[in-house]
Image 1: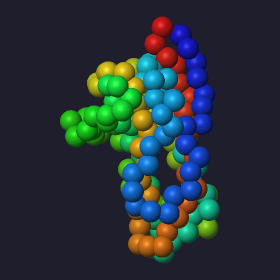
Image 2: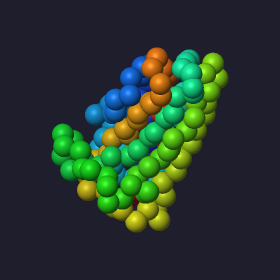
Image 3: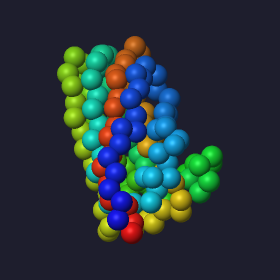
Image 4: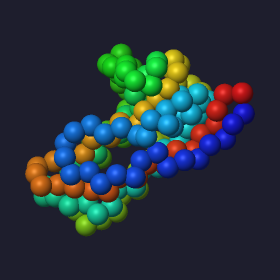
Length: 133
């Protein structure tokens, strides 16, 4: 059993586009028994408050993402979390052995910050997990 704790993302986001975690962690977070995610959003600006969505997206070969339309509830880690301007938000999510969707090889963490322009936030994502034996 492999225990891992890694910072997957440290990014300043000021657009509504999807952003992906670093590729070299994809295979590590694709082979897990359980994982817990901590997301810290700080330096938040925007009015009204921007929202953050974080999902886990599967890939069979670390180049092509698999659309998560069939398993969206299981892969949505954080959905429409409102981030208050000038505040720090600490969000968390977990995936355990009861997840009904086994992974094929690797995962990315995909995050999108949305709002009425201009908006921005620094997004950091940590994962602690237990790999399969």
